[in-house]
Length: 68
Image (cartoon, rainbow, N blue to C red; front, top):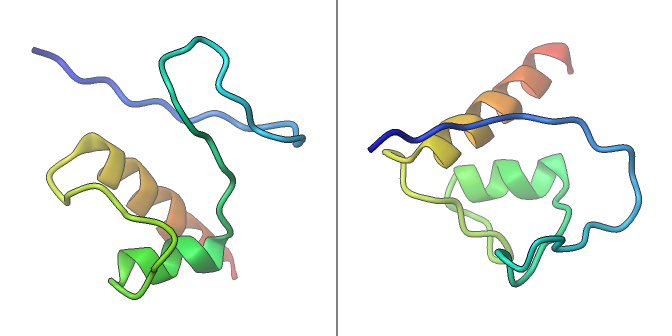
């Protein structure tokens, strides 16, 4: 099977599941994502390091670190 991953920009507002596939959607701050990546988060659980979702999250976080 093939797994694809995409990034998109949001225009703000409250996130909402739109197609019935997701049960819950939320925004997380960069600090919350960083804490979860370092194993210190309690509210956000990051997927396993082998997953494409982990790669996308880690890449997004690293991009923000270089511009900070």
